Length: 153
Image 1 (cartoon, rainbow, N blue to C red):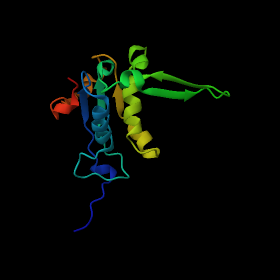
Image 2: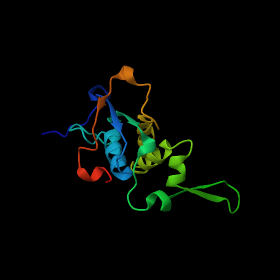
Image 3: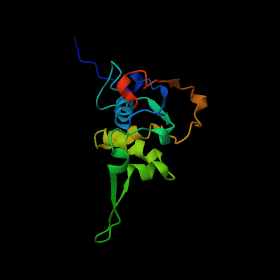
């Protein structure tokens, strides 16, 4: 048996939509990262962009376990001496761009290379329930029913 290695002609990308309302952030991010890489497919090839196009809606209604809403901090540096700043996950979720929490979690679950930066362009995250991708007729992936631990009670 020869080892199968996918070529660009073998790649079949689908569109999937995931509702993040009530889902725990880390569990959602790991499922989305797996779908973006294409590891859920039997023809997975590590050096090819095999993953699906993923649409995440209701990112502002994501849940965090424990006290992470108040304790988890996102840092950045202004470039000036002593210019390190931070915001908590709760501040970002209540702010103007709550989808950045989901985007950052998924990005950090992918390897840090050129291919994963290309794969991140296949992720679309929206704070509300509306999205402009109805023409692609995405199929719904129900993350809540995959495992009872995926939702926070």
